[in-house]
Image (cartoon, rainbow, N blue to C red; front, top):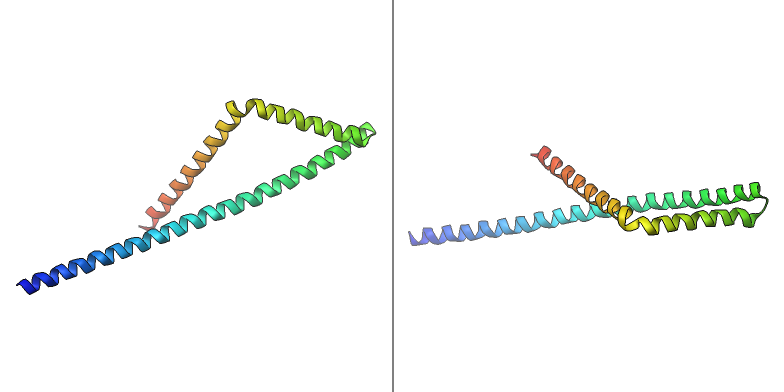
Length: 127
């Protein structure tokens, strides 16, 4: 009887060890998946941002050259574009705390929770 209890306790310890090992492996794989998704999201967002910046810069250059043609001077055309940027910078500076930061924070939180909800839906479909 004592020998049977020792075998049961040994089996219980082995089962607990296997459970802990499995749980650690699951957590590791879950974290790898999360990091991979975040990295993929960062890379794709960076690519989109770079494309927008390039389009914006080329569009600005085109606008400056067009205004130079219309106004008859490169200095006037590029000066108008510089003034436009200055006006835009002042608008952003004075409205950033009231409107822009709140919008960015809300967008980020909404995006995070939407991704979290998508993950939960995927897990529910697997079960």
